[in-house]
Length: 232
Image: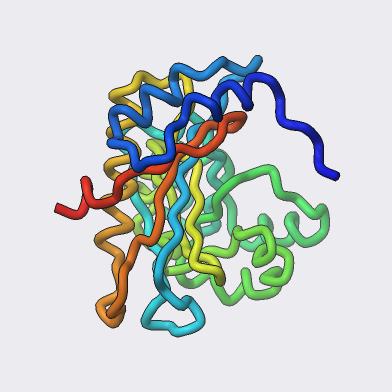
């Protein structure tokens, strides 16, 4: 039916015990697996005991990872006047006003990863909401991408600010590092990301919050982490 797993994947799988790992041991295990021919990403996955169809159980937010993600994030800022200059000085890759929105609409232009918009530009962005929404590019106040503070927002995104949002099945997945990072760098990023998820726990939730937690590299099987290590 499906494609067979590679020899390296099977060998890695055989090294993983059926238990919950501490962070240091889990990262050491991942780093010890055979390397692919490219710099693999390190991903984290949560299964949460929330029901996102209820607004008071929606889990979303942002976290600035101490060591970045290892990816170059291309930032488009849509604003007017002095805010354009502020964005450029902060390192935005593309800056413009309504003409940028027209470019997106007419050229189907998506050569960027994040859009940051001034509040007064949102009514214009609404014209292309159906283009941006499915790609996860529509700016929103909750994600911190609708703002007048272009300097700090662009700087944080460039440094490694990651947005997270639980999906309809209660899952959060995110890429948080590269395998070429040191073990300490990966551990720091994982710890900060988990901390952000724990802080975002809905007040209304009565049952268990984090049902399972794991990390993996692009080509490796998952290693389960012991969430109780972080809930202290």
